[in-house]
Length: 234
Image (cartoon, rainbow, N blue to C red):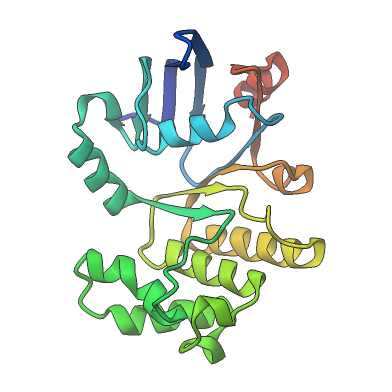
């Protein structure tokens, strides 16, 4: 039977062992579902498990128990190589620190996932995308020649150019001033709407979280009662 949700977690638990042999539970019994094309904000204080949860949802890490169903596929049934293949085909990322390759131009950074995916016309597709984020005049500039906001625009173009089903964003406005942050937020949600992409973001920015369909609040590795109720109600 086809899963009605693009992301679903069941009793997700993540533990790590500290250097002094103490078992630390980072995430404890996480259960939620997210429908396709929706936007979900994961919020909480530092150390509450937000980035760890994002990594599990994307298949970058594996839980100690429980499971993540991503676009109908149980990630726990896949090998590391199979999870990487799934990410390449269906997932993209935007990070706080942009993660652009310094030796590539803005256009080349956007072309990279297309070239790795054997796209037939990577330059043409990347040109269209860089123009869509308002940087058609910056195609030959390197990351160190761009402002923080411009670098994040390139990163967003790179994320969307492969038309992912799901975009994971970890503090996408965290390194930006308020004015630039608002512009980047507008661009992110505009492109999400244009392409029908599911958006999952970790943020400390409450104004950014309010733009999402749903908010999931983590408190010491658990979902708060309110955020779980809100997910079911939406």
